[in-house]
Amino acid sequence: MLRSISGAPTVVLITGHPDPDALGSALAHQRICQEFGVPCAIAHVLPVSHRQNRAMVKLLNIDMLQATKPEDLAQFKFLSLVDTSTPEPTLDLPADLRLLTVVDHHKMAEVDAPFVDIRPHMGASSSIYAEYMAGGLAPLENAMGASRVATALLFGIQTDTDHFTLATAADFAAAAYVRRFVDSDVLKRVGRTVVTASAMGVLGRALGELLVVRDFALAGVGHVPQGDRDAIATTADFIMQREDIDTVLVYGIVEDRIDGSLRTDSPSVEPATFLHTVFGKDRAGKPYGGGRADKGGFQIPLGVLAECEDKDALWNIVTQIVRTRLAKVIPDIEREYERKQSDTHHHNGHHDETGRYSREF
Image (cartoon, rainbow, N blue to C red; front, top):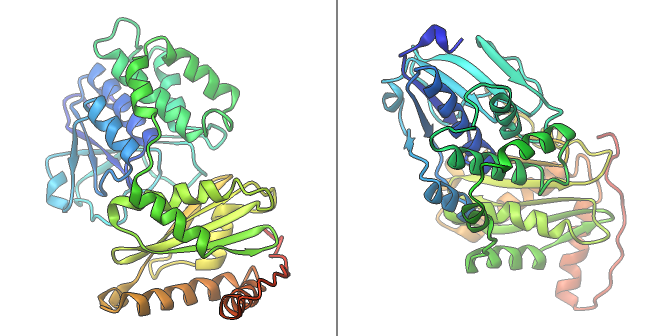
């Protein structure tokens, strides 16, 4: 398929905020295209927001184009998607930009493209690209810049499999192949965990506002700057460590939208179904949220409400909306909220966790 478009400019467009799996896959895709004489650029719409991801882009010298309008992609004839099966929804694509390839490890979607490889059983899209290379498609052996691509792929596999705890045999095999070419020093520097002061502030607000209904936890973190939006996800990861919780949802206001993350290790909660049931779809029929086996996320535009200058009033409206929506599947969430409010006012410390959320997921 790549031979058939030799010389035609192609763009890998990353959906959402670029993360390690998408970046590793994009870099590998670019390397494969070069092998077959296809000029390939990497582009993104939303900013690289997480410190770790910014370090990855810098240390591996990943050159990317930020597209903010359709004209930014006018120079390309073909589009490739990695780590997703849907283009970035916030950008209208040029009408003549043709979808060429889709490589993803999330749930199968209806995709019309000449080349589609979607494997939900894999832990990372980077594993699929590593497998391509191990099988002889632009192999890393003796390749120029092999360590750069290999390091990106291994970090992508590592992060998307939660440090290999969710890895399959295929993911381990892919990691074993690229490991020989990795720059260990760069990998160590990229993977170093650093928490900013503002991110700790987000965590502090979440713990202070935590609502627990049996084994479900809900935390609102207020207004979060765009640059700290990933703190919502890391806060959800942290709260999941509490021993009596198997599902947590953390949300906040980021610019003009409600932004949230779901984490679960419950066998009866399927994140995409849960979020779809709670938050529904937009007017175009696209779900506000999605996810995989153990995690999910959602973004809901605030529309004209975003123009509200009273931040406290806006936050009160958002928290009420989220609780009302959640009450569909967790009937006792409002009761727990009222109980906590009563405890706060009367300082009696009384705690009576009741209710259990619906197990139909």
